[in-house]
Amino acid sequence: MISPQSQATHPVASHQDDLAEPTRVAVLLAGYGEVESYRDLSSYNQAATKYIASQFVSIPEWLYPVAGWLLGLQDWYNFGFKHHHFMSPENEMFEKQRIGIEQQLQDRWGTQVQVFKGFYFCEPFVQKVVADIIDRGFENLLIFPLLVVDSAFTGKIAVEQVNEVITANESEDLPFKAIRYIPAFATEPTYIDLLVRQIKESLNQLSTCGCFESQIGIVLTVHGGPEKANGLLTGVIDGQALFDRVQAQLQHQYPLISIGWINHDMPFIKWSQPNLEQAAKSLIKSGAQTIVFKPLGWVTENYETILDVEDAISSLQRQYPTVTYTRLECVNDDSEFFSIAAEWANPQIEAMLSVSKIENEQAKNDGA
Image (cartoon, rainbow, N blue to C red):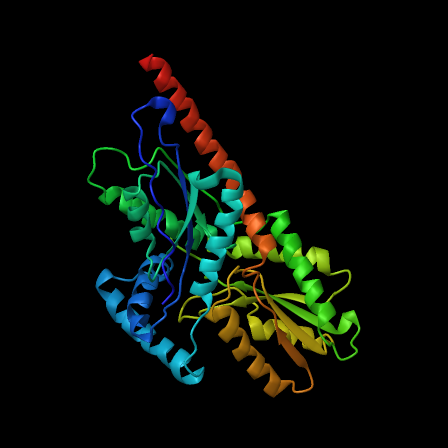
């Protein structure tokens, strides 16, 4: 198991106004998380059914445990048998991202800002982390889903779970002075430029079998989604926007580029197309002699960016054995990404601290 992040120590409070404890901001990085023990697969999938699947197909609440158990068996076969006891690196990488972003923020704000991590479907759960943040006395909360795309669908799970904690808080006092939110960053130029640079650097390092650029096929992978959901956009719009912007910077040099949706196909549900194999086959038919898969819809490596892509590559190798295939990684612990992510948080932190400063000054004047 990943060791929990270090506990913050509270400064000793002073009874003098000018020595009062400074206002603090808790930044909550929120993500899916992935199980670190196969024993947790059932509860993981039960939570995923509640917060995700129920948004686009009607599922009675009593069915959640059954769905979690059946999906857990499917994952046990996929991870344990088919993929030789695979264990996702997502949680470990997410902790590296938490540390890296916190270092960037504390370089500017000091210990007034602390970064926490919480997962939707496994420990440490978002609800538990938010309750801990309240207990530590943080006045402000910045919700930061570290998902890139699908924010209106899965990013809002973070808001839902934060609200669950606030509603359950029995104190008469409000737990926070302010709560702010960072939406999907699928159209942020700094992130898009980073992805483009990573792709070009990877292609320069790869042996492309003497291919011209026109013979290199690039499949940019994004998390797929159903066409319809209960009042929420499923992320396909954000995913397409991210793809369009990355493609625009690459296509003059690399014309064979396709989006590749990583789907969780279900009966009676129409998902985004083309999927990974369809996208690669289209590029191969257009003359690609090598196919490169690069994840766009995730910042952290996980079973989808690894296993789903490797399964697609295995299938393609059987059908097109003369073509070469490469799977590239997510941005993961790239130090430049830490800096970029911190810059997105800075304006929201500054706004919350500025309001608190004004309120504190007014309180001093009123008490004078």
